[in-house]
Image 1 (cartoon, rainbow, N blue to C red):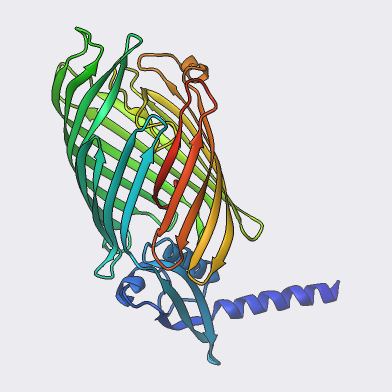
Image 2 (image 1 turned 180 degrees about the vertical axis):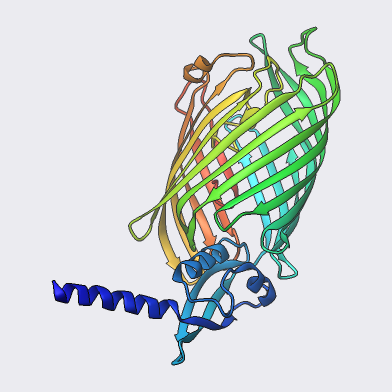
Length: 419
């Protein structure tokens, strides 16, 4: 018993000595484009602080989530006077990235989106970019995001888009096609509590225009309609993801709440809310299991312009482009990624997936979620061609095959993982 107490006292003594070790110098190594001053501003470890491995690990996790950094790790060099040097070793990404998204179905539908983005402007992890889209009609968007405009917590985002698509409208068991245009200007304030929790608050001024093209008509559904709206948006994100090149592990949750008002008596104000849950797990040395669950609801107006869509490029691979709409959505995406080949900068990854979803009809009931008319299940396979040293340089190609009622099949091609 006496020896036991001696051991306990010794361990406490060692711990108290280690806690007295202070950080004398912090060195940032390996960064070329990313400014050292930016990294120093972002990390929590500072010269003069007591050495704390928990804070060091949080800093590394925070750095690895930055677009400009593909990998990071720390080293500690101890000196004899109860001080140490902390070295952050940085492996950078190339951050000027073109983007390409192509999607088709077996009814010869074809659409594409091309763009370019810079994720580390001025070495400060400022993102700027845009895209051009051709989905029957031409569209474009421009985005600007400064996540650390004021210190390590406050940021700002500005977005503009002019999006034009052909929208299917469903009513009275019939279908019509409308040309839809959405022109918007958005400003968002960003705040980061810590490395795991962040919020955003924004406002979007936009104009919607619907023009009838073909199909069924109804005296209750206008053939031409234009309205100006204001969207108020708030979001919360919790992220505990850990990145190791192409592998991801951990949990992430993003909640978005929106309120849309127009001041136009012809259009009702409405609410939209959805939460995306992500879960990633390493399986063996080369496997990665990835999952996404979306739960969404909106005001249940009986309108053909409901906010949740069934879409090839967003939620169900192979289903087609905006084939249906609803006022509620439950969507599950699960896939197993496996590294087939890896050498130096190149990685070839296989992908086996199942996308499934169901929707509540506009003005419908919660029992719509269990209706066979609304459930869609699309298994499929794909490949990923990955460049390890370029941010989000993942060229993906997936082929989804529907196994539920009135199913289609088709390719979805793009840059970046599907989720």
